[in-house]
Length: 126
Image (cartoon, rainbow, N blue to C red; front, side, top):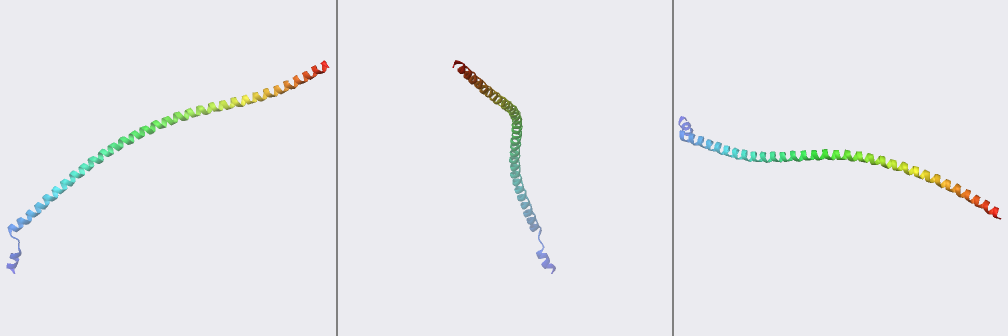
């Protein structure tokens, strides 16, 4: 039995060959990991560039929103001024219609007086 055990026991050359295979596999794994690392670094750089671009776009949009908010405030103020002008014009229109009604009434009164005067003059002539 001792002899069979010895037959199965790896020799120094076999053990070196196994070690050599493990070293080769380890080297191949390291090469693979390095390749994957380079790919990931490239992708990371690309994503960082995209992030930077997106940050710039967001900043530009924030600036545009700020500008539009200021413009809206300005337009709101102008709208308030226009609203006041329209109210002033409405008030002037109401006053004009009131004056027109007053003048119309006075005109009717004058016409009645003129007709009465003409009627009196006609009766005097006759």
